[in-house]
Amino acid sequence: MMDITTMIWMQEITKTYRLGEVNIPVLKKIDLSIAQGEWVAIMGASGSGKSTLMNLIGCLDRPTAGHYVLEGKNLTTLNNDELAYIRNQRIGFVFQQFNLLSRSTALENVMLPMIYAHVPRQNRRQQAIQALKQVGLGDRLYNFPSQLSGGQQQRVAIARALVNRPALVLVVNQLAH
Image (cartoon, rainbow, N blue to C red; front, top):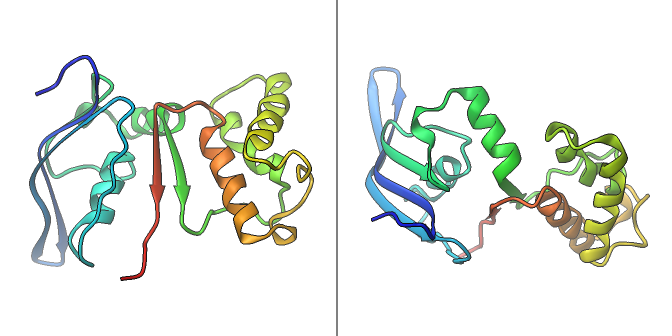
């Protein structure tokens, strides 16, 4: 049941991939409700549908059937451009491989999502600097990813995910069993 504090509400989410003539069901009628401020870990065996569910939550893919509501907005009815807007404005991603641009400085990597969010040019730099300071990298603004340790690269990725103040942050991490 959805109420005012519900951030994510999914009802009977189904995802089936088609491989030639064969349908491969991955998720079958998943119900999920996550409140604002709640921390959730999605865990399971390899091949259980974790990545597929994360891709649906992050609007990187669409369910085959079911309803997905994020912050009171029914996402299952949106077109690709509207979903891209939601991804950019409301969702921050921290990927396991960090996905930093190797030819861009830490500051430029953090500024990138603000360009797509149409943050005015004069605000981008200061907001990116502030985000990098918050993760302890105020002294590494002009370093390229190759000049940063793995932990520092991860913090750049976190600053990039948080710079637009998203409502939802997805951390995609695959732990070894």
